[in-house]
Length: 293
Ligand SMILES: [Zn+2]
Image (cartoon, rainbow, N blue to C red):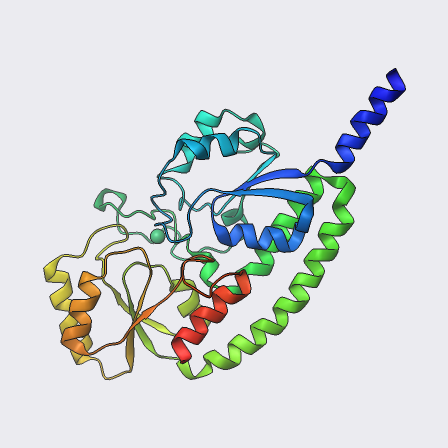
């Protein structure tokens, strides 16, 4: 009887998958590359949703209740919606600091750390810019953090996670070279964006940010700021374009575009935010092709 029970437990262990919840689709895709069928993934945010203000649907609480691991972007990107869900799910495995909690921002060199004007002004990113997924060079760092965490939680499959990580990064390195070539003509090009969504991308490819449409991260544009922006654009001699995310209101961008003839280019902020951006690889393909077409 005892032996049968042990066999039953071992069998269930051998076939049970690691249950993972991730905040965003891009994390799901990188995790799938590392873990394949060894994990079951629940993704909390919808890809076209504003990543700062995800609708806290009750179904998200049940998704968190039984998972072994929670992987989040961190850097306060989820601060407005995820902490109450974690609290209500009451799953000790995924509490901040527990073994099943992975905050990716902890592994990244973040931009704008401590440079923010003032928390009192309503800046949604007082601790630095959390939109680091826009730099494709951060992907191998994220993949490594995920592979290492899964190797700890599910040590019997450690070799598979590490092997998959190596294969993934070898392929990724080739992409980085190809994307670098394609982006060369954009060096020095000046850009307007709604929010500081694409700073990592701009920095990586040596593009410049002329200004954001919102006066401060998380603050809606005022007509004064838009007027100033329009005159600033008119003074600029350099080639300009507006890179716009899919979730902020476009009224201001359209007005600016109408007054200055700047082109608005749609840029995904997450995997599946735009058609064609259906994997972590195609996420960058879609951004770069959108710019270069
Ligand atoms: Zn933001």
